[in-house]
Length: 219
Image (cartoon, rainbow, N blue to C red; front, side):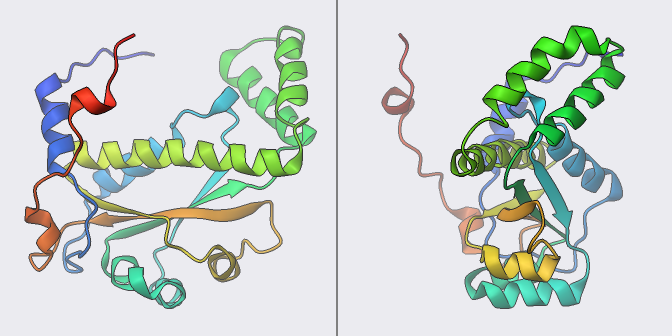
């Protein structure tokens, strides 16, 4: 059932002005269970083309595994090890007809519609998604992962949880460490969540954004 809710424009703008890509996390401050769950739900409920959700989100709680990941990317080592929650976002390498079938079945069960009603949708997905060259699919699926990443960052800002998105990962070593090598998925990016450390000078920096008139055009 849909629930009505209201959030003010000022609240959203304030949260977006408050957030920044946190460079140093306070390793002694941990996320509340409710906030952790909300962030993971935001990832799971993120929009994707055709609703195909060509992703997997790996929550890395094991300290030894985090250390291995940190060793693979020294520039981001402290964020990986000190943050309260680390999520690695992986994309599906290729979407097959089988994946389309699984998605259509999920839609069927969620909406209570017949297979016959969904047949045109299935045919379109089989041609448009599974029918693309593998290289095109890989790029397309990566774009879907970035949509989820954006949703998570916005959710974190609304919760007053600090976050740092990281493209500076080593996909090959991450895949090996996380058991993704040889699987249907491969590492795309990562997000560290937690609370800013007092030592992080970037927390006090003014936002360096281009003027609205430069980036927003009304047509």
